Length: 300
Image (tube, rainbow, N blue to C red; front, side, top):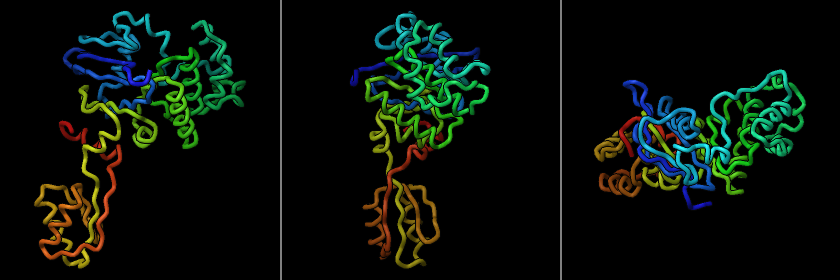
């Protein structure tokens, strides 16, 4: 399935009275990859997911999942496993029994042991869910989403409440799904984790699409962060002035300036103004830095 689209939306819109939660969203989520669905609170991520799962109806637009129309969601929902917000579990039942209930409702109980092992809950499967931590409940909910052996897994904040080890396990789980050809569509605020695990990014702000594409492409659209330190500390202000004159945002970190711009340009300007640079280095912006840059203005 890699190279095709698992999810396609065309002008997908949801209004609540006078408020537009999702505004003409057109995106394509590639199959067989891990896609991060990111944006600030209120961006429309959860509303989009609910429309894809047929929990709410769109006001306008259309969508398909594996080529099947959102208007006839029953034709594809059996291929989809989902975790949306806080999982609904029976606290007095064990983890295994919770999965048994859900499996019987879905007509599939054959994978209970397998999904418990996948999410690392085999040792606690017999314990009451009421004794589970929040992170363990999240793991159990993900196990439930995997019960039908889905072609598409939609996870809304899957690492919520997890410790670093649990987050690492979720990262491995998502990569493992992609290696098996399963599409993972993951909404998350933990951008450092999205950056480490996702192949593709869909970024929303106020219901509108700001970016979709690979992380590599997104990073290439933004100048790397550059740190430059003059050999003579007395020339720091002059170096900062030259950088600001280029329209760059300049920060000062002790004896160096920090800017986003091409290092060759700054190096040439410094040389032209008799400023010797003792240090000049660059690093790509992190997804978190790009995220805040994009969500604080109108686009890329």
